[in-house]
Image (cartoon, rainbow, N blue to C red):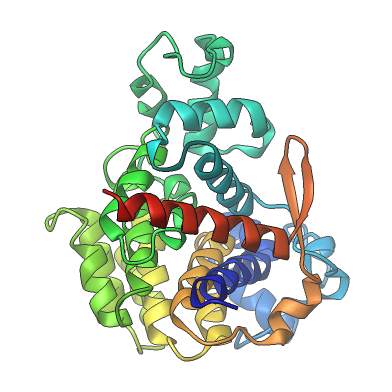
Length: 354
């Protein structure tokens, strides 16, 4: 197995494991708060969190997503968007545009699987009749209307950005640009910057040690941006077991699905546990806020820089990846890896001729 294939396999494994870890308690964390999340984890013997979460009856927790019933990675928007990014890259490569993203959503992404900024943008597309614009043609209106929404600095674009970094190892500037094009459909300002950072960090981790990669990814953000400040705040607290509490306190006035508070959690959890996959995703989820999103992002980034992901994390879902995209109910891990490697190799050849 090549280094590229190994790295991409670990990235997919890490993203899927982290997402599945945080999925059962996402609504509990989001609507009932961190204290309720912590109580639940203690009650099911999952504190500290180092394994998939068990079930006890709770109105916010779906038993089908918990350890006892886990036979595949259950469908989730975090993984939907990663697969959508892969499809976009397969179809358009480095020429991918924001219009291509809009077309892919309309063709493949059910409206019911969108939330906040993405649902608003989707609604604008439908209201303006954009489902009718053909391949290669403009939609007939300014797509900026889609990102003019009250959720444009929330976490949605950040969870869509990972794959752009995976397929462009050592090319963080280009990964950041693709993330910007994707994010622009639904997000603005700090919402875009969070996506840029995640994509750039993933690309940088393939060529640099984690500390240098962090500096490189920060270089893709305006130095005075709130996203850059959130990254620095998370990094400064790496190694501090109370770092999650400090982040929640700093951003207490924000939605639990804002870009900034969750970005700080991602950086804190990852850089606190660069040598321990279970601790990295476990602390990301146990810190609360958007648990499945942060677990997924930390898991993917850890996979890009770390060693093998323990089989205790990958075996329970049996290489089966659930999706909720049109025509895609389930896909195998092996197929995702093979397709992503093929894209990375093709983009590498294109980049080499620039």
